[in-house]
Amino acid sequence: MSNKPHAWPTKAMEARDDSADAAAISLLAMRPLFTEKTITDPEALRNLAVINNNLQFIHNSLKMMGAKTKVDANFWGLPRGISNGN
Image (cartoon, rainbow, N blue to C red; front, side, top):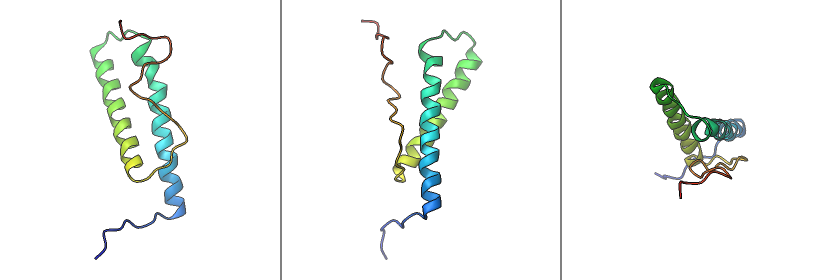
């Protein structure tokens, strides 16, 4: 018995790749909420953290399944112009 992964059908492959791109775009769209604003409501901050975590899980899972993405997202890098306090 072979452990070789099966090829994805074309439509499933496109859906996988598009879904990974959508997750990456969503993560990038959320970055200003974490880096440019002060969030004082603990529930809002928790909800954003859960959303961020789930989007990262979705994106990473799809990438592990071979998704080819068009969006290059550096999720943990700071945006240009923001220092790390040094």
